[in-house]
Length: 372
Image 1 (cartoon, rainbow, N blue to C red):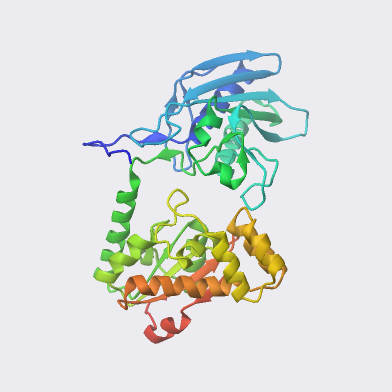
Image 2: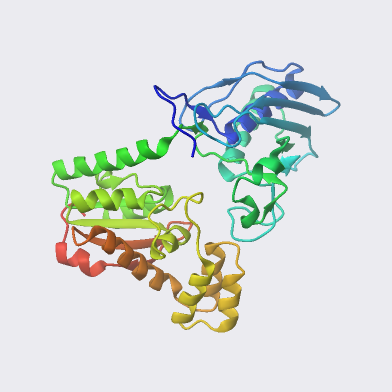
């Protein structure tokens, strides 16, 4: 494990932010004839970082720019990598498309946010790049018909240090990042913020709090109960950090909301749900399918599945309610960690935010939390 440096830590930029900066520079050069250097972009939360260009060249109908990925003081495997964007003017009406260049992976299996055959450029970085392209098209009165190819030289080798291969992402890295910012060694800081959220809830006599694995499940649990913002704990993947602190500093009732894949991990006893620190056991998941009445064919499909999302879809098609059993077992795992300190329920949501399973409602009725 990389040792955390002493003193203040420097933030860095995600591969998605770097790809966005390179894309803006290349497209601006095609439209204006000149590369902006440094190139400045606006991130989803309003930050406006600037990036020095490493490559800057163009030809007939195309331009290419690159920046170096700076992860700050975080031990990110992509720190120092060159992120290259090559943009090409596309056929009128074709819109904005994305391609995987050297060192960027291609999705080959179902169950990921993008379908097989797509470049492993996640939805948020795509959204960021589309925003920059659109802004420049408005500025220069151009049509947003663009092919964007992202490359990361050496990315295939770097990807061996990630989970991409098991997920069926071949040929290189994924282009990631939801905020554009890398927070160095942020696990401890994140868990600290969870603890402080619990402290505030206790200080304000909040009887019901909720932790969610992501924005979609957070929105779902807030809407379901009408919970105020100060009742929401920014749990993320750190369900163990939340539950262990609640064991010593309890509130009457806690809801844990998340997607199926994350809560499968909790059901299987994992308390850190991050993909780099825990994995779904598909053999155990197949045994769960058997306990739910699923036949041997469905069990075999589960063992060979690429993601838990794919397993859920297979079970739904076969009318096997595995999500109910996962909710129950996740609740049992959470209760074991809490050791009776407070009541708990599990709420599983799908990717659209629809609640597909709940367990622990009896605890909710017992405590009847106020403000929910």
